[in-house]
Image (cartoon, rainbow, N blue to C red):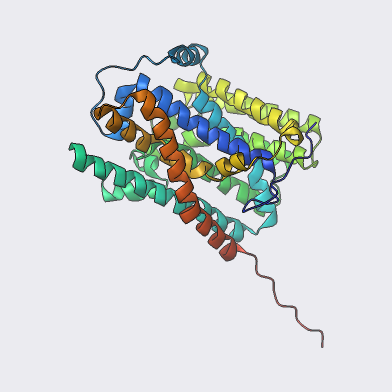
Length: 381
C-alpha cells in the first residue's frame, strides 16, 4: 500500500511531495552518467556526430565495459530506465498541477516551466559549438530555421534533427500535457475509461500503415504517442496515492495500459527498439512503485533536493556539451578518466547556474501570470 510521503520542508519546493522530486534528480544524473560513460567511450562516432568533432580513432576499453555489454545482452538500458522514471514521474505529478490551477493557469505555468530553460540550454549548447568551431575548425551545421524548430520542440515533425537529442522526450511530454489538460477540462482525468481510451487510441495508431511510411509529421507523431500509455501509468499511481482509486483498480488499469504500451511498441514505428524500451520501462515503473511505497522511510536530503531542482537543466546540458568537453580535454592530453568527472561536474555546475538565473525566475513569473484571478464580490444591495 502507498504510504504518506515526506514533504520538502524548506526552500522553493517547500510542501511538495519529496519522493518524485529526488527521483527526478537521480534519473537526470543517471542519464548524464550513462551518456558520458557509455556513449562517448564505446561509440566514439556517435558522440562525434552529435558534438560535431573528429572522432577518436578507437573506442576506449573502459573497466565497466562488462556492465555495458550486459545491458546490450539483456536488452535493457540504464538511460532508458531513467527516461521511464521521468515519464512516470510526470504522469504522477501533473494531475496535482491540473487540480490546483485553471487550464489557462496550467498552460501558462507549463510554458514558463519548459521553454525559457530549454532556450537557455539550447543557447549554451550552440555557444559551445561556436567556440569549438573557432578553436578546432569544426562545423556548426544548423540553420536559423532549424534552431527555431528545436526551440519550439517541433524539429522531427518537419524532418529536422535535434540539436540536443535528449529533447525528444520533451516532445512526448508536451503531448501528455495536451491530452491531460483536455481531459481535466472535461473533468475526466481521473476516469479510468478515458485514460484507457487514450491508451487504446495511441496503440491503435501503430497499426495504421501510413504511420510507418508517411510524412515525417505522421511518423514522429505516432512514434511519440506510443509512449503516452507509459506516462498515464504515473497518472494511475496518482489516483491510488490520492486514495480516489483502490489498489486493485489501479493495478488493473496500469496493467491494461502497459499491455497497450507493449502492443504499440512492437506494432508501430518504435518496433526496432521495442524490447529494450519495454524491459527498461518495466524496471522504471517498478523502481517508481517501490520508492513510492516506501517513501515515508526516505529522509529528506538538501543535496538530493538540489539535484531534483536542477534535474531539467542537467538533462538538457550534459549531452552535446559533455561530449565536446571530453573531446577537447582528450585533445589536450587529459585522460578520459579525469575528463569524465570533470564533464559531469561541469554539467552539474551549468545546471545550477541555469536553475538559479533562468529556471527559478521564469517559474516564479509563470506562477504569477498563471494565477487564477478571483472575481470581485458584488455587494448585495
